[in-house]
Image 1: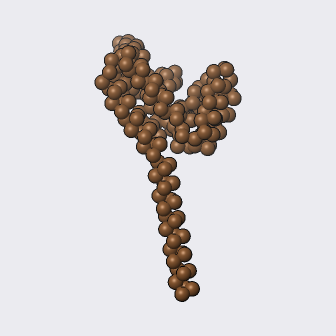
Image 2: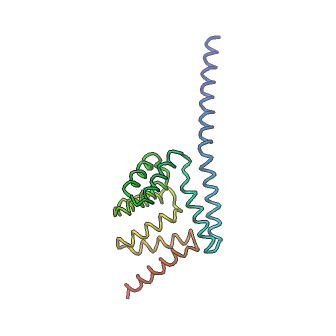
Length: 193
């Protein structure tokens, strides 16, 4: 009887652990699934809107990207953004580096840290962080814009042109990407003559 009771307690404990793991797994993945669904919906709308609607939807997408689902990560994000707004990219870099250390899968941390690096004239680390963003979020058109600017600044206009094409595939009515692409195309054609 004692052996049976012990065996039942072990099975009950294992069952509770499995149930707890499932609940935690599902509970933690629900916000990510909800955010992904919301982003998919916004990107679908983005492909079918006009230029004015595009700007509005782009801002909604950027807002979704900044939602980490963690109060502590959101605090680091806010402190870093405040430091950028105050013209202190070095302080912002500290906050965003802490954010990346604590949430390495959160693409927006890399994006904002890249912004800080860029403002500190650290082009190499900025480009590396933008590549991290695009690894985690291949539709991050803002990271593509930043990378295009840096590629042009570092003498790789063909790469920048490809990035503007990628942006226009995602955001077909982006006047900024369209204008930058046209300017760069004209510049490259002028060099070829």
